[in-house]
Length: 285
Image 1 (spheres, rainbow, N blue to C red):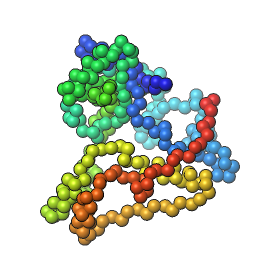
Image 2: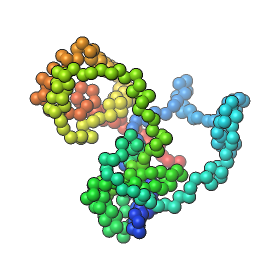
Image 3: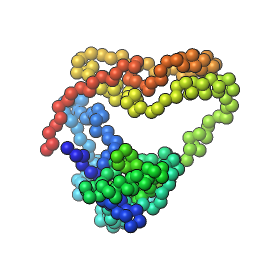
Image 4: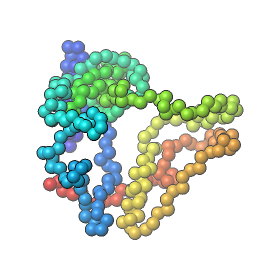
Protein backbone atom coordinates (compact mmCIF):
# COMPACT_ATOMS: atom_id res chain seq x y z
CA UNK A 1 0.00 0.00 0.00
CA UNK A 2 1.36 3.42 -0.98
CA UNK A 3 2.29 5.69 1.97
CA UNK A 4 0.00 8.54 2.86
CA UNK A 5 1.29 11.97 1.87
CA UNK A 6 1.79 14.50 4.66
CA UNK A 7 1.34 17.42 2.26
CA UNK A 8 0.42 17.96 -1.37
CA UNK A 9 1.04 21.03 -3.48
CA UNK A 10 3.24 22.30 -6.29
CA UNK A 11 6.99 22.78 -6.61
CA UNK A 12 7.46 26.01 -8.57
CA UNK A 13 10.72 27.10 -10.21
CA UNK A 14 10.17 30.20 -12.31
CA UNK A 15 7.50 29.28 -14.85
CA UNK A 16 7.94 25.53 -14.28
CA UNK A 17 5.39 24.03 -11.89
CA UNK A 18 5.23 20.40 -10.79
CA UNK A 19 2.58 18.75 -8.53
CA UNK A 20 4.44 17.13 -5.63
CA UNK A 21 3.81 15.38 -2.34
CA UNK A 22 5.80 15.19 0.89
CA UNK A 23 6.18 11.89 2.74
CA UNK A 24 7.66 11.33 6.19
CA UNK A 25 11.29 10.21 5.90
CA UNK A 26 11.97 9.66 9.61
CA UNK A 27 9.47 8.25 12.08
CA UNK A 28 9.43 7.26 15.76
CA UNK A 29 6.39 5.00 15.37
CA UNK A 30 8.45 1.82 15.86
CA UNK A 31 9.96 2.91 19.17
CA UNK A 32 8.94 1.23 22.40
CA UNK A 33 6.20 3.32 24.02
CA UNK A 34 4.92 3.19 27.57
CA UNK A 35 1.54 4.16 29.04
CA UNK A 36 1.13 5.83 32.44
CA UNK A 37 -0.74 3.60 34.88
CA UNK A 38 -2.17 3.87 38.37
CA UNK A 39 0.31 1.90 40.51
CA UNK A 40 -2.49 0.72 42.83
CA UNK A 41 -5.12 -0.34 40.27
CA UNK A 42 -3.07 -0.96 37.13
CA UNK A 43 -5.50 1.21 35.16
CA UNK A 44 -4.34 3.77 32.59
CA UNK A 45 -4.47 7.40 33.67
CA UNK A 46 -5.02 10.44 31.47
CA UNK A 47 -3.88 14.04 31.60
CA UNK A 48 -6.21 16.98 31.95
CA UNK A 49 -5.85 20.75 32.18
CA UNK A 50 -6.65 22.22 35.58
CA UNK A 51 -6.97 25.80 36.77
CA UNK A 52 -3.73 26.76 38.56
CA UNK A 53 -5.65 28.66 41.24
CA UNK A 54 -8.84 26.65 41.80
CA UNK A 55 -7.40 23.25 40.92
CA UNK A 56 -10.58 22.42 38.99
CA UNK A 57 -10.50 20.77 35.52
CA UNK A 58 -11.03 23.13 32.57
CA UNK A 59 -13.16 21.91 29.66
CA UNK A 60 -11.70 22.16 26.15
CA UNK A 61 -14.24 24.83 25.15
CA UNK A 62 -13.07 27.01 28.04
CA UNK A 63 -9.36 26.78 27.16
CA UNK A 64 -7.78 29.72 25.36
CA UNK A 65 -4.20 30.64 24.38
CA UNK A 66 -2.49 33.42 26.29
CA UNK A 67 0.83 35.28 26.15
CA UNK A 68 2.36 36.37 29.45
CA UNK A 69 3.28 40.04 29.51
CA UNK A 70 4.85 39.84 32.97
CA UNK A 71 3.81 39.58 36.59
CA UNK A 72 1.24 36.91 35.86
CA UNK A 73 -0.67 39.13 33.41
CA UNK A 74 -1.75 37.67 30.07
CA UNK A 75 -3.21 38.81 26.79
CA UNK A 76 -5.50 36.21 25.27
CA UNK A 77 -6.03 35.11 21.68
CA UNK A 78 -9.02 33.43 20.09
CA UNK A 79 -8.22 30.66 17.55
CA UNK A 80 -9.66 32.83 14.77
CA UNK A 81 -7.25 35.69 15.61
CA UNK A 82 -4.23 33.40 15.35
CA UNK A 83 -5.51 31.81 12.13
CA UNK A 84 -5.90 35.24 10.50
CA UNK A 85 -2.33 36.22 11.43
CA UNK A 86 -0.83 33.16 9.70
CA UNK A 87 -0.15 33.62 5.96
CA UNK A 88 -2.51 31.78 3.65
CA UNK A 89 -1.39 28.31 2.64
CA UNK A 90 -1.23 28.49 -1.15
CA UNK A 91 0.15 24.93 -1.38
CA UNK A 92 3.16 26.11 -3.38
CA UNK A 93 6.81 25.31 -2.72
CA UNK A 94 8.26 28.47 -4.25
CA UNK A 95 11.98 28.13 -4.98
CA UNK A 96 13.74 31.35 -3.97
CA UNK A 97 17.38 30.42 -4.55
CA UNK A 98 19.81 27.67 -5.47
CA UNK A 99 22.85 26.94 -3.29
CA UNK A 100 25.63 24.39 -3.20
CA UNK A 101 24.62 21.27 -1.25
CA UNK A 102 27.33 21.85 1.35
CA UNK A 103 26.73 25.60 1.78
CA UNK A 104 24.24 25.21 4.65
CA UNK A 105 25.47 24.26 8.12
CA UNK A 106 23.61 21.10 9.14
CA UNK A 107 22.78 22.70 12.51
CA UNK A 108 19.93 24.31 10.56
CA UNK A 109 18.51 20.95 9.43
CA UNK A 110 15.21 20.10 11.10
CA UNK A 111 13.12 17.23 9.63
CA UNK A 112 13.50 15.35 6.34
CA UNK A 113 10.65 14.50 3.96
CA UNK A 114 10.71 12.52 0.74
CA UNK A 115 9.52 14.62 -2.19
CA UNK A 116 7.83 12.77 -5.06
CA UNK A 117 5.46 13.56 -7.95
CA UNK A 118 1.85 13.82 -6.79
CA UNK A 119 0.45 12.81 -10.19
CA UNK A 120 1.68 10.45 -12.97
CA UNK A 121 1.68 13.32 -15.48
CA UNK A 122 4.14 15.22 -13.28
CA UNK A 123 6.96 12.67 -13.74
CA UNK A 124 8.62 14.51 -16.66
CA UNK A 125 8.88 17.93 -14.99
CA UNK A 126 9.84 16.31 -11.68
CA UNK A 127 12.65 14.30 -13.32
CA UNK A 128 13.90 17.43 -15.08
CA UNK A 129 14.22 19.34 -11.80
CA UNK A 130 15.75 16.36 -9.95
CA UNK A 131 18.40 15.71 -12.61
CA UNK A 132 19.24 19.39 -12.94
CA UNK A 133 19.89 19.63 -9.18
CA UNK A 134 21.96 16.45 -9.22
CA UNK A 135 24.15 17.49 -12.16
CA UNK A 136 24.70 20.95 -10.73
CA UNK A 137 25.40 19.48 -7.25
CA UNK A 138 22.99 22.11 -6.02
CA UNK A 139 20.03 22.38 -3.68
CA UNK A 140 16.93 24.56 -3.90
CA UNK A 141 15.69 26.70 -1.04
CA UNK A 142 11.92 26.98 -1.08
CA UNK A 143 9.28 28.43 1.22
CA UNK A 144 5.72 27.44 1.90
CA UNK A 145 3.13 27.22 4.66
CA UNK A 146 3.59 23.75 6.09
CA UNK A 147 1.42 22.52 8.95
CA UNK A 148 0.13 26.05 9.61
CA UNK A 149 3.61 27.61 9.80
CA UNK A 150 5.77 29.32 7.20
CA UNK A 151 8.74 27.02 6.66
CA UNK A 152 11.92 27.09 4.61
CA UNK A 153 12.95 23.82 3.00
CA UNK A 154 16.18 22.63 1.41
CA UNK A 155 15.41 20.41 -1.60
CA UNK A 156 18.06 18.03 -2.96
CA UNK A 157 18.17 15.12 -5.40
CA UNK A 158 17.89 11.84 -3.51
CA UNK A 159 17.89 8.46 -5.24
CA UNK A 160 14.95 8.21 -7.63
CA UNK A 161 13.33 11.30 -6.13
CA UNK A 162 14.18 14.29 -3.99
CA UNK A 163 14.39 15.00 -0.30
CA UNK A 164 13.04 18.19 1.30
CA UNK A 165 14.46 19.08 4.70
CA UNK A 166 12.73 21.72 6.79
CA UNK A 167 15.19 24.30 8.09
CA UNK A 168 15.39 25.92 11.49
CA UNK A 169 15.16 29.70 11.47
CA UNK A 170 18.20 31.70 12.53
CA UNK A 171 16.55 32.83 15.78
CA UNK A 172 16.02 29.16 16.72
CA UNK A 173 19.74 28.35 16.57
CA UNK A 174 21.62 29.08 19.76
CA UNK A 175 25.13 30.47 19.55
CA UNK A 176 27.92 27.98 20.23
CA UNK A 177 29.79 30.61 22.24
CA UNK A 178 27.89 29.80 25.43
CA UNK A 179 28.41 26.03 25.08
CA UNK A 180 32.16 26.42 24.52
CA UNK A 181 32.72 29.39 26.86
CA UNK A 182 34.42 27.35 29.61
CA UNK A 183 36.45 25.14 27.26
CA UNK A 184 40.07 25.64 28.34
CA UNK A 185 42.73 26.40 25.77
CA UNK A 186 44.90 23.28 25.63
CA UNK A 187 47.57 22.65 23.01
CA UNK A 188 47.60 19.02 21.87
CA UNK A 189 50.87 17.15 22.25
CA UNK A 190 52.44 16.56 18.80
CA UNK A 191 53.08 12.84 19.38
CA UNK A 192 49.54 12.31 20.65
CA UNK A 193 48.17 14.24 17.68
CA UNK A 194 50.17 12.07 15.27
CA UNK A 195 48.80 8.92 16.93
CA UNK A 196 45.25 10.27 16.76
CA UNK A 197 45.65 11.05 13.04
CA UNK A 198 47.01 7.55 12.47
CA UNK A 199 43.96 6.02 14.21
CA UNK A 200 41.62 8.14 12.08
CA UNK A 201 43.38 7.07 8.87
CA UNK A 202 43.39 3.35 9.75
CA UNK A 203 39.73 3.37 10.75
CA UNK A 204 38.52 5.32 7.74
CA UNK A 205 35.27 3.94 6.31
CA UNK A 206 31.83 4.84 5.04
CA UNK A 207 28.72 5.53 7.06
CA UNK A 208 26.50 2.45 7.22
CA UNK A 209 23.33 3.20 9.24
CA UNK A 210 22.64 -0.53 9.71
CA UNK A 211 25.77 -0.80 11.86
CA UNK A 212 24.56 1.84 14.29
CA UNK A 213 21.93 0.43 16.63
CA UNK A 214 19.67 2.43 18.91
CA UNK A 215 21.18 1.03 22.11
CA UNK A 216 18.59 2.75 24.31
CA UNK A 217 15.75 1.19 22.31
CA UNK A 218 17.49 -2.22 22.37
CA UNK A 219 17.86 -1.94 26.15
CA UNK A 220 14.14 -1.17 26.51
CA UNK A 221 13.26 -4.16 24.32
CA UNK A 222 15.46 -6.41 26.47
CA UNK A 223 13.91 -4.98 29.65
CA UNK A 224 10.36 -5.63 28.39
CA UNK A 225 11.29 -9.20 27.36
CA UNK A 226 12.92 -9.82 30.74
CA UNK A 227 9.79 -8.59 32.55
CA UNK A 228 7.56 -10.81 30.40
CA UNK A 229 9.82 -13.80 31.10
CA UNK A 230 10.16 -12.89 34.78
CA UNK A 231 13.93 -12.73 34.77
CA UNK A 232 16.39 -10.05 35.85
CA UNK A 233 18.97 -8.31 33.69
CA UNK A 234 22.19 -6.76 34.90
CA UNK A 235 22.51 -3.03 34.13
CA UNK A 236 25.51 -2.23 31.88
CA UNK A 237 28.50 -0.53 33.46
CA UNK A 238 29.21 2.97 32.14
CA UNK A 239 32.65 3.37 30.49
CA UNK A 240 35.28 5.08 32.58
CA UNK A 241 36.66 8.37 31.26
CA UNK A 242 40.29 8.26 30.19
CA UNK A 243 42.48 10.17 32.61
CA UNK A 244 44.90 12.72 31.12
CA UNK A 245 47.82 10.72 32.53
CA UNK A 246 46.61 7.59 30.67
CA UNK A 247 45.83 9.32 27.39
CA UNK A 248 49.11 8.46 25.63
CA UNK A 249 48.87 4.78 26.59
CA UNK A 250 45.22 4.64 25.46
CA UNK A 251 46.20 6.13 22.09
CA UNK A 252 48.99 3.59 21.67
CA UNK A 253 46.67 0.69 22.43
CA UNK A 254 44.13 2.08 19.95
CA UNK A 255 46.80 2.43 17.27
CA UNK A 256 47.94 -1.15 17.88
CA UNK A 257 44.43 -2.37 16.99
CA UNK A 258 44.65 -0.92 13.47
CA UNK A 259 44.53 -4.39 11.90
CA UNK A 260 41.03 -5.01 13.24
CA UNK A 261 38.07 -4.12 11.00
CA UNK A 262 36.25 -0.95 11.97
CA UNK A 263 32.60 -1.36 12.87
CA UNK A 264 29.78 0.80 14.14
CA UNK A 265 28.70 0.56 17.78
CA UNK A 266 26.53 -2.47 18.45
CA UNK A 267 24.04 -3.22 21.18
CA UNK A 268 25.69 -4.66 24.29
CA UNK A 269 29.04 -6.39 23.48
CA UNK A 270 28.59 -6.59 19.73
CA UNK A 271 25.62 -8.94 19.86
CA UNK A 272 22.59 -8.39 17.73
CA UNK A 273 19.79 -6.42 19.37
CA UNK A 274 17.05 -8.67 20.82
CA UNK A 275 13.86 -9.15 18.88
CA UNK A 276 11.04 -6.80 19.79
CA UNK A 277 8.40 -8.32 22.10
CA UNK A 278 5.11 -8.96 20.39
CA UNK A 279 2.34 -6.87 21.88
CA UNK A 280 -1.34 -6.69 21.13
CA UNK A 281 -2.39 -3.53 19.32
CA UNK A 282 -5.49 -1.77 20.47
CA UNK A 283 -8.17 -1.49 17.81
CA UNK A 284 -8.94 2.01 16.68
CA UNK A 285 -12.17 3.32 18.07
